[in-house]
Length: 296
Ligand code: C5P
Image 1 (cartoon, helix red, strand yellow):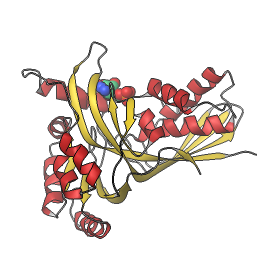
Image 2 (tube, protein in one colour; image 1 turned 135 degrees about the vertical axis):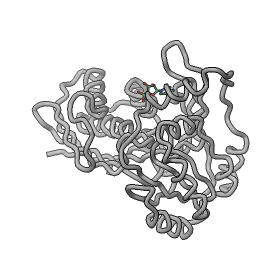
Image 3 (tube, protein in one colour; image 1 turned 180 degrees about the vertical axis):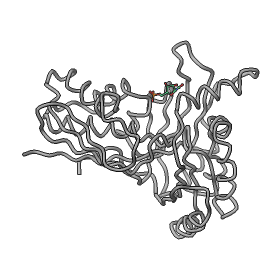
Image 4 (spheres, helix red, strand yellow; image 1 turned 60 degrees about the vertical axis):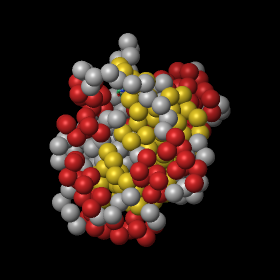
């Protein structure tokens, strides 16, 4: 029997510039995505009907709400095939953690089903289908480092020199992305919201590969909203800075905290210092950039 397994990375946002709310309820973004070496795996096996099983943390839907299920159904209907597949998701990316784990699973399901059903869709078609499932799905297909405009789905890959070393503090319990965007709108209701622009300092830091410059340039417009909904994140970020992180920010809509280290060995010592605090449910080390969804 043909079985296809796809490995897909988590993302951290190096810059998340959030513009005013649009008529469709979304926000125009300047979203600099960076794929890091925390992976989910999706295995596709022929089956009479579409089923989803999940291995790992609780709280992942196994019904039609699961983004991997939506991806399989969308691809099947686009290609004119029956969605006869059992998808098994092995999760290592935190659930509702601001690292696009659900979007990653959708991207992996697109690649896995395309291979299993031999539908031979182009990368452009998969990116287009991905954008219909969620704003972060196309980047999970692409990987690397990229700037996303519009909802975040209009992607351009960026050259990044070398490798960056990260430590991620997972929280106990997630945050809802729509709730964090709504809180961001509430906090900014009485101030002009400027149009977001790509940060020159960030682009320069990526070109030189200097982690200290990158750390200084990290920026997330959703961070005040995540801190407002989860005040304990302020002390968690501070703990990373106190432990020597060269950059600290909430990942995406949170509540995962992302800390940048200056080297691999610095990341190890930072991870061990943060593991000794009570701020995180778990602490993980990762590097970036890494490839997007690939068959393994
Ligand atoms: O596109 P996706 O379904 O992943 O987005 C989840 C939620 O995040 C949306 O329902 C919306 O509330 C918010 N969002 C937004 N603007 C974006 C992307 C997401 O407001 N550009």
